[in-house]
Length: 96
Image (tube, rainbow, N blue to C red; front, side, top):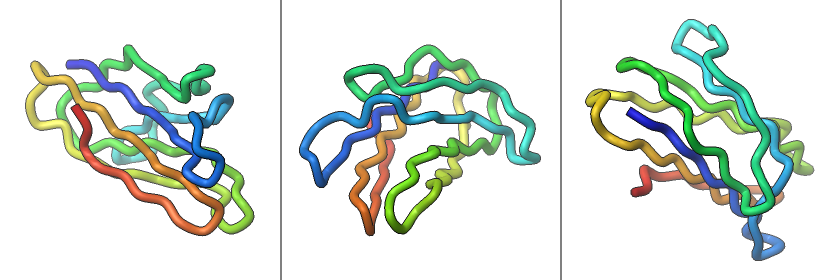
């Protein structure tokens, strides 16, 4: 199983580099942490099956952080969780 994320700054129209991101288990235990690269990406995390959350320290004018909770059901699959971010809104989806 592998997990990646990609943060895009929709207001600026470019990747969001330098965003701190934590991967946590459902109980809040930190499993991994990192910072998005110049392309707004983090790759190579390997969480076990279960419910997890990505905590993005975005510090926009309205949102200090964005938390995305998701479920890993098949450890053999790749999971990609993009975050599209603007000062007063965000969206996410399961990517490929």
